[in-house]
Structures are given as C-alpha cells and as structure tokens.
Figure 1 (cartoon, rainbow, N blue to C red):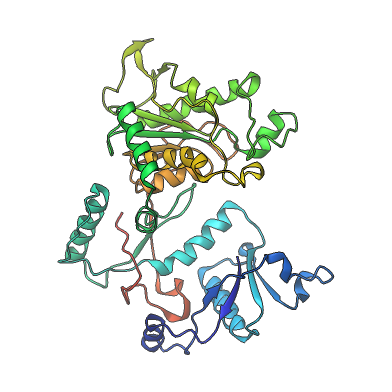
Figure 2: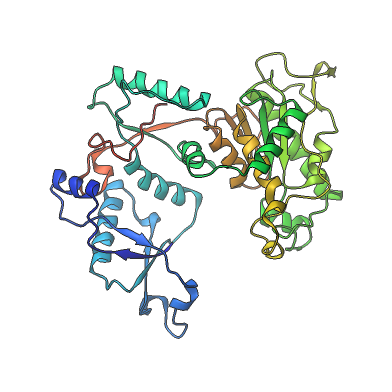
Length: 409
C-alpha cells in the first residue's frame, strides 16, 4: 500500500472505543491515497530508508513467532506513524510474500472485523436465499449464546475470499442493464437456474513459471493473450480441466456444470466432449446423458466464444471500450449465482466462490499447477477463536458491534 496517514482521527466509533478501553486518544489512523503517480514521490538518488517523502514499514513475519509479538510490533509501528510529519507517505510490506505470511497478516487484520452482532429480533428484507440463510443462522446463534461466548472467525487460506465479499460486492456494485440482460439470456440459453448449478473455473495461464517453461520461455502469453491450445499445452490443460470438472461433480452430482476458463478454445473443448466420472466419488446419481466404462458420463455447459476474454490488466487493452470486458463480468457473476464452485489457483475462480458465499467449493489444483484430486480438505471451512491478546490496544473481541460481523461455522 502507498498511503498517507491523517492524524487527529476521532470518528465517533474510535473515540468511544478509546474511552471504553483506556487507550490514548487518537490511536486510529485514517488513510488517503496520493493524487499523483506514486513514482513521483521517490528520490531515485536515495536509498529506501532515507526517502524524504516516503516511510517504508516492513514486517518480517518469519521473526514474529507469537501473536503477542505481532500485536506489540504493530502497536509500536502505529505509534511511530503518529510521530511522522503529515506530508510523508507510508508504504507497508512484508519481507517475505509467502502464502503463509500473507494469510497470517490478513488474519491478524481481519480478527478486528469479527464480533458478536445484534441480529436478534431483527428482520431482513433481502430476497437472496443465501443472505436469508446467513441472517437466520446468525439469529439462531445469538438466541442460544451469550456475549461471553468465544468469538470465531474463518481461517483464511487456499485462495479464499472473505465470506463477507458477497455482501460488500452486491451493495457497492450493480451490473449495467445491458450486462444484466446478457447474463439472463446466457443462463436461459444454457438452462441454468440461480442456486441450482455448479460452476467450474480453470485459469489456463497459471502458474506463470510453469507455463513459461512449457512454452519454451515465451512470456507474452498471459495478460495480452495468445496462448495456443495445442500440443503439450493442450495435453496438460485437458488433464487439469477434466480433474476440475470431476471436482465439481463431487460437490453435487445432481446439478448441471457450468464451465469457465480464460481460453476460449479450452472452454470449447470441454463443452463439446463427454467426461467419464467413473471412479469419482460423489453422492447422488449425477446429471448425465449416458454411461461409459460402467461410470457416469457428463458434459459441461458453457459459452462458445470465438475470442478469448480480454484481461483487464493487459497492456494492449487499456484503451478498449468497457463493453469488450462484459464477457469477464458475465462469467464472474454467473459463477456468483451458483450453488457450488470448483476452482483452482488464482483469484478469479475464488472470487466467484466468494460471491456465492464460500458455502460449497472445491480447490482442484495445487500451487505448482498440477491437478489436485477430489474430494480433499483444502476448501474446508475452519473456524478459529479470537482471543483477547490477539487484538490491538486492549480491544476485547466481545465488546462493540458496530462495523463487525459474526462468523457462524
């Protein structure tokens, strides 16, 4: 992050929290982003430690062996930020960007977002079945537990968006009418009903390092497109995609499967070929149209596009009309309306799972890009307790409800 702290932060919630917990006033930090290009704030003649306009704060998670040490280190840095001149900017970083370190840092921050919420006797006006299910579950939990009960939060790992992303996204964003019409038309054409199908997503271009080797050093295949579905690439991806569909089948064998990928020829292959579910463990009789080798045969449905979806971060796509990206949002929002999601590595598939509430998902790929057979425990919902010593400046996990959500496993 590249942000500027705004001092004398005294919003009502933080003010009350300070008073209740005996904290020094003004421990909260509000942030603003720089208006100019971040590079303009750096003096290239100086080292990062001696920049006049930028203060770099780095956390070495490998040297922080306990939560209490992390709390102490963070509190110290917040206090140091308050001592800085206001015109200086802050960059926050980790020494090591390992998956474990990133997950631990995210969990530490999000521990401050969960608590006991006052949903008892409240009503919900939403018609979204998943949101209603969450609301009712929270009410039942509150009615049977008191405020001294242990506060829980979800353990973050394995390409998982926070459960709250489904609500945040739908509150903040609404698809344009043209996109909504396109999504409804596609779902009708494919016979998909919201909450009654399985989504399977494969990011064909991941992992980058492995694919570069497979393509003999070609680095231009990713965000700017051009991955050819042929030869060794095709052989490898068919294996990955077949396993991905089989993982979707293990989640629910009675529902149709909607297949999505970032390579149109790969998608076309999967929606035009039968897949043998023999030896795949599942409950139910399967959504199928035949049998093979004594097992179940299924064929996914999907969009047969003539061109691959554009990557929004591609260098060649910066001046592209926004409507050219509709296919990306079409795939994402349809996934968000599914009952279950089978996804691999990368954020797009896990984003779709997050929009569906993370209630039913499978991870079909290892970090090295190889298939991960299903069922497996990589997408299990694991609840961890929030202890008093986990939070900053003496905050108590069971105090205060404003701005917090309740996690019920």
